[in-house]
Length: 338
Image (cartoon, rainbow, N blue to C red; front, top):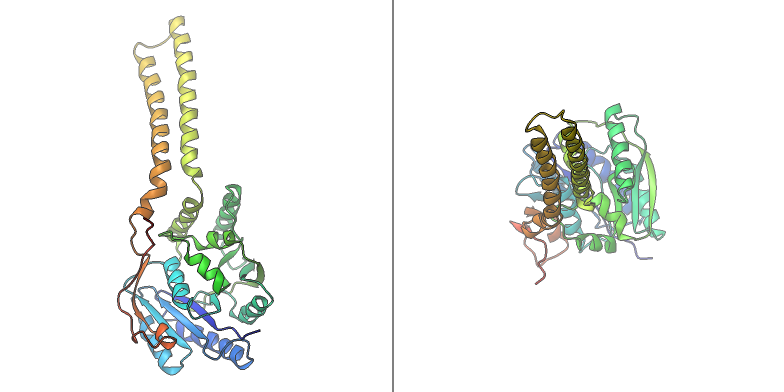
């Protein structure tokens, strides 16, 4: 079997405190793989700077000057972790046989990278890193995560429980993933739907060594909503069913009002007001949900805005002599079919 070229994609956002340590650990692992001829000697670690405000990019440049295995891609501003992952995968795709993504804080176990490479050589196109111990999480985070996976499974969305963004993908999987042109792709949900041979490796997530978490409660809620709304229209249909129930309640109340009116116990004017409020409220919910069925599916995509903007790319020129040493304002846009 031909020795594969590996790129380790590391999204970074204000990772100045932890980046030197993470780079040293990843560098040793990659160097060992190269020494053992498990991957090619021109394999790389690609840091994607997601618009950091600290010295993250300066550290990436310094690492690259120290060792050629390090390289970087820099966004013009902060676009989010999902965009950083897509940008790293897209940048590495033309040149890499295997791509591994891992967070810069290395709470995911980087020592499993050789195992992932071995499982890919055994015929697996996708290798998921899955947590088998959430004891380091708070009760609230653990409970909400379990509830999220349960809820998504009930809605028919195929997710790998306790899997974040620590995974290996072969070139053809990355190509299939990049063919999905959503403006805000929910990568954790898309990859299981691609259908390639896959396996899992298990690990215990470690506490963050330095810096702060980039996923506070607000971002966790937004991430969960992105996953929910990207793969199902169940919330819109729930509104539709609620409207039907309310209309049914309005009809039942109208019958009850007529009965009380015949009994002579109703307050003058009250019946007509209540019946109209219940009926119109239910009808409006039905109408809004029907419109939402169409608008919700098209609103985001028709804007065709770039998912990210790359300000500088020091990775690609190492493999392509036809490109300049720095690529400025590279736009990645969804394709438009006429």
